[in-house]
Length: 202
Image (cartoon, rainbow, N blue to C red; front, side):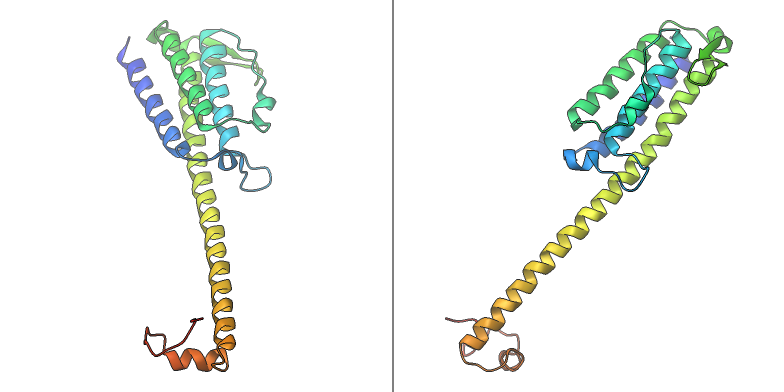
């Protein structure tokens, strides 16, 4: 294999590795989460970019029709991390097989992009596959960050709610023990573990 194609596969492998790192540990709810209107989930982005890789390298560069249904790639997908990683691995294996059959002389040859209705070079199709995957890698990483921030915010609110309940229970205990208003009882205990303080004791 020519060094150009070997380097191409190394770059693609790095991109796929970064995508897998962004997928790691995510539950199905995170994979299906869409950050806003007309924005795609992580699961959809992986399905779409692997479909595009197959189309650009297979349909255009290799002349092997895939029967791609591009609009279907943007429908919700019930896929877990393992299934998405398998799609990436299958795509890489296919591209590796295609590149083993073409030469540098083939890069300037034409290939027909039926989705665009125009003829492009095989070299353009291969490079566009890399840049397209890199673009969606960035979106996947940002979407994960947004989901983690949202998830962390929800957890913080839940913790606040638990703390509020705990404080409410403490005030009830203070009143029940006949120590007066909650505020004066708290001042009396001075937020210490003074053995003489009856705060919260039954």
